[in-house]
Length: 223
Image 1 (tube, rainbow, N blue to C red):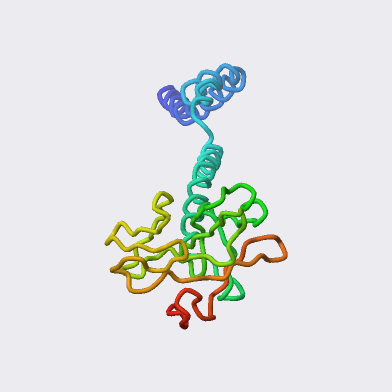
Image 2 (cartoon, rainbow, N blue to C red):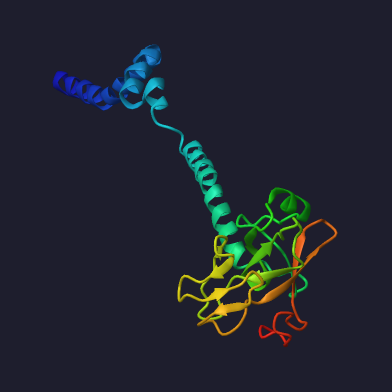
């Protein structure tokens, strides 16, 4: 009997011991929770100073996006200005083009004449995107026509040589006088003409020349 009681008591103790342990552990955990939390959290959580060293991903992406846009805008503007000079945006009238400078800005007649010296030959964007020369005459007036700067030999851009008072092509040696008429070959034809006019906004406008060429008294070859 004693052996049986001892065994029963021992057996009951073994059955209930894990439950007693669990209850005791919960009691200790509840009493010491603040300290326990501090001990465990310090192992797995970063301090505020450590977290500050790692930037927020969304903030970092936003700053990178702003930086990219800021640095790209001047580049895109430069590329657009360059392309718009040679490939102008088509207007409503294909025979009429507002003259633009190398930066793509519309040219005002009053300002252009006021800031240029007599005898100036300046390249601007003309009809079909071709470079044209606007000319200030010796009396300080804007000539009523512009000259296409593309050589009629093989398509080089012909510079104005003020010392020679001629357009001289450096590619193959063609010479043109101040009106664009051929002085020396191999260019077979004079430089193309365009009418120079002013619109209601004061912008210089270049229009396709369709009348007879006053230099040769013949129909324009560029039609």
